[in-house]
Image (cartoon, rainbow, N blue to C red; front, side):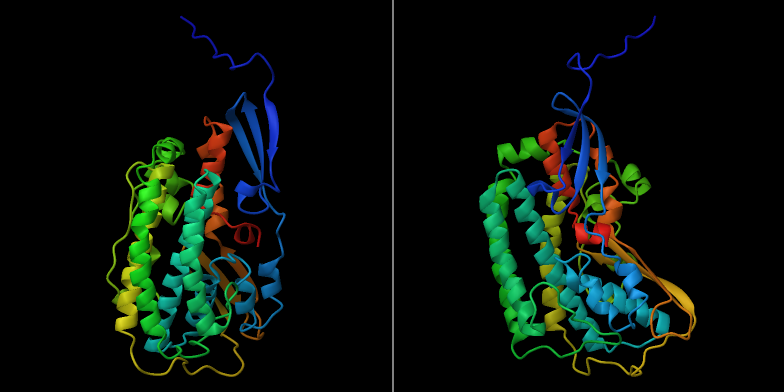
Length: 374
């Protein structure tokens, strides 16, 4: 017996709808070409490139120290982790020893950045779904993190806060006490976010069972960070391939079970808690000593190539750098950005859902277009 081909909801052709590139919920200049059957998405084609600035090619025409400034401009809401991934790649290529105190300071900066990034994600994603109070709360606490960054390096967005071989400056007086005070304040505020969202009936309807992806499919698509861990895969570069001072820190990997939008929300909330845990350990255990290692005035690594990855707030951020041994600039530099790789899961996530769910699914991936396009 032949089965009938399912008929579309309406007896019309599919409608093609442009969502973006200027759209408040696309978190940047992202264009989504949606094919719709009524309100249901049957196809999605992300169009990127509107923010392309050629950072990888620019890096091949700057000396190694100048490239740190360019990395700020990729994930511009997590500039410190961009700096960290790049400088550690060059240190690995050059076999440079980084002082222990500098590695601790880097860990502190990276975890402050993770908290700030997750707070911005929480506020903007909740705001996309109508929970504007959470947006205001998230920005309120993020300002406290930016105050700490400003005290350390004088900047609040693009920090240029690391150097090949260590840190440009030591921590300001009383900075550690202020970080611990922030940790206490942030921990007191986390229940407020949960009271507003975790058991909110509307939020549950918009996130539970929306955008489900299995662990196997997430791995096959190359996902990393919270989207991968939300599907139950306990992959975290900080644990699996420790860098900075993470081998001396005690923390847990947050994982989900269902692989839906709601689980990815819970994973990021738990990651904020674990970041506060790491911050307390790093501040309490901050060793004495120099913050800059022995680095030649002219950085010219020997001929060779290397790849190094870190766990950025949005996922695994990797740098490939090749040196010809003669130039003070990278011969080749390529970036494996978390946002770009995670974005390719979007067509898989949105098909079968409603147009309104696309908003939640773009948010749950947590992309920033500066990193996607570079």
